[in-house]
Image (tube, rainbow over all chains, first blue to last red; front, side, top):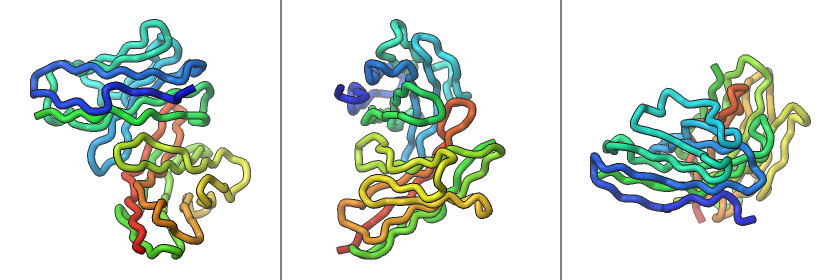
Length: 114
Length: 112
């Protein structure tokens, strides 16, 4: 098991373009989470899935953001019409159990919008 | 609402000196508290966690933290700093709403 894998590691895009990130969780983990971390801040929750069901979304997840986990395995996070304020590190995590235990974070995708 | 406050966005210590990183929490229910470490361009690595068992929690790399309900604190300590401890440290509370609430982080610098 290689842990939680995120691709790409870095993405530079022009304002207005669409971008998509991928997260491959630990294979037996049924819960998958997306967080966003801006410079000088702690990670902020965006959304989470249990299997293929998206069970919770933060108000930070504007209508330009969409996340999917179609087969309950990998997940994608798409940002449409990117804005400079979307520049951040996007972190994915997965877990098998509740209560924050056993959480494993990926190394993140750093997005820069120019 | 649940939240954590980390006092001091930057802490510098000499190699071999005591490390103390402060975290205070606000929670309406007994919290699950965590400390994570983040190295540059890396994800978050769990240092230790408090989940209602022993109030003194030992973690990896010689770190420990003490849960003090009366002070609503969960400060992170290490008796002797090593150069490899230089990183960003985040305190977090696990919410009953199935998510972490993280503090704003403390950047630790270790001076040789």
